Amino acid sequence: MHQLDHPRAGDALTTEPDDSAILRCLRERDRFLLTGHVRADGDCLGAQVALYHLLKALGKKVNIINPDPIADRYQFMTKDTPIGHWDTTKSDGGVGAFDVACLLDCAILERTGPMADRIRREKATICVVDHHQPSGAVPFDVEWIDPTAPASGVLVYRLAKKLGIELPRCALDAVFISLTTDTGWFKYSNTDRETLQSAADLVGAGVQPAAIFEKLYQQFPPEYPIGIGAALGTLRYEANGRLAVVMVRREELRKLNADLAETDDVLDILRSVSRVDVVLLFREPQLGRIKCSARSKGSLDVNALMKNFGGGGHMKAAGADLEGSMDAVVDRVVKAAVHTINAASK
Image (cartoon, rainbow, N blue to C red; front, side, top):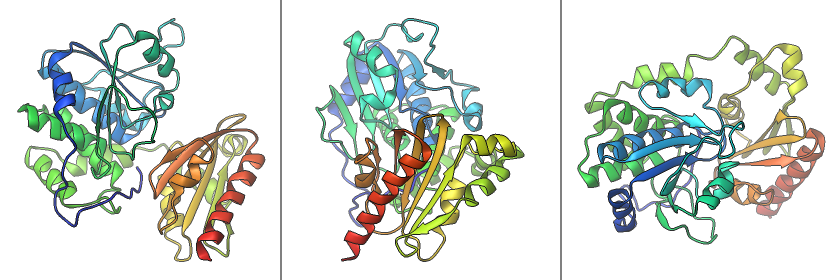
């Protein structure tokens, strides 16, 4: 779940990019690999599930293989859709053959982790369906990118309409998951007319928001609130209170028997503080590797900040994976954030 910031054209539905290449690709090619960024979130998975069923309706062979196993909170999405992950015991990761590699919610091949080299070796067509701002890198073979779209899943929903395909209920649920997780259940700045119109259409088609909310946000383990408390217990403010910083160490979570697989609740709490403009949350998925999640509720561009550390995202929601000890990484990123905040104040 990310707070986004996109260019808008008032409250009107925005003009779509040219769709001729993506539609031709979907119609004419036969074997599709669907993948996305590491630690796939609701939008990435929702877009994949929706595109999987769109392609199946076209009679295509389709596999979803992600860099990582699907998170527990999204396991219910596998009931009607097979979602695999990179198999380290097999030379090809268990991917198999494909004509088209379609990256969902991801426009940087390296963000697919171990999938990247496998995709390069196949020398297949690379297709991107994404709503992030293009990185400026060499374009892919086929790109369906619209930074004004509220979620990548909505782009797939548009394609289904263009092709006249009636998606099954599980795919409609998946589009709704994309839409709601990336708009923070309609409270972020990317909530526009298309967001609400699409949501209304999906509910009219049978999607049940309350049931989806329960599956996504009311199934956490008892250790989860303890993890939130552990994170908040490390809170410190920098830049005259405009920057909130928290860090979550593996050893501390282990000692407390705590869980913090999901960090958005912590980020939302810290953004609720009136003086805070930027939040940085550091966690340690494994020793020597630090994940930084950055959120902004003002005009400061955390996408630009995270790009300094090999990451990226959106203006108001971004992240980066860094190597090093927790203390060293926090020191580097916080110094850069404070410098950015102070420079913007001048």
